[in-house]
Amino acid sequence: MAALTPEQGAARFLRHVAIERGLSQNTRDAYQRDLGAYAAWLAEQSITDLTLVEPETLAEFVMHMSGATGAQPLAAGTIARRLSTVRGMHRFLFEEGALPSYAGSGVRTPKKGRQLPKALALQQVEAILDAPPIDTAVGLRDRALLELLYATGARVSEVTALDLDDLLAEHHRGDAWVDPEAILGDGGFLRVLGKGSKQRIVPYGSYAGRALAAYLVRARPALVAKGTGTPALFVGPRGGRVSRQGVWLIIRAAAERADIHHEVSPHTMRHSFATHLLAGGADVRSVQELLGHASVETTQIYTQVTADTLREHYLQAHPRAK
Image (tube, rainbow, N blue to C red; front, side):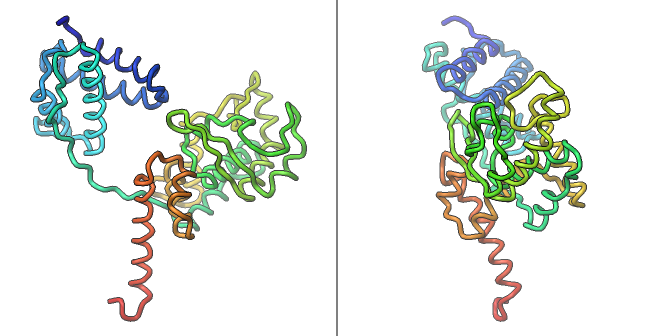
């Protein structure tokens, strides 16, 4: 059997997940980072041929990631993800006939400790949403972006990819915008392209609708005029699409203005969206659809957050709880 370097194997696997499985660019980038770390470790072991890798080799890789060999230990979730990527590559290459055996057989994935999502209190969310000033074009954009994040629970990559046409409202007629301030006030729907290129329709309410209308009328035209033209919904100061890093900076600045000193990220807004919906009585299946989760088990972790909150309130309020 011909020799196969880790770099060659990774390239074949990445082509496979891109073309045949249609995974997103973000997922492929994560796979590439994981496989790069694996290739670097193999090089340290003087292993340059994947056909020589055995289950014992992968077990040693897990020990290395866990810090057993003196290296900086990785988090259990990172180890599990990285091992899953490596095993996926080995399985694919074995099934393609490029490797003599499947090296992932019998290699155990470390158990991940259960991490409950961190959600903000409603008052904290409201303080963040009210933080951007609305006397500038950038402030109006930031207010609309933050309102939409919390209103829909969308991922940061989904929000930055939004185009004007993804706002499903009657005010968009070809290239003409007809009084969005009057029409968006009651809310509407958003077309979101999620993981695996799966499309879903998500509603947003009147608060987000009014913020979007103000941004579209009083801010976006001036921002777009600074660039060469873009269909992007959210536009930066230079007229181009707002980046994911840009959204992080917007949220961080809003949290600082709201006097919230712990870490707040786009995913914090998503966690808060789900937790507040469930606390308000929303059905788990409905929240699953809104979040774009493939499995309801992923959504059910938020029910534990809500249950913990209810128990805390019960212990504080019931005269015979303690």
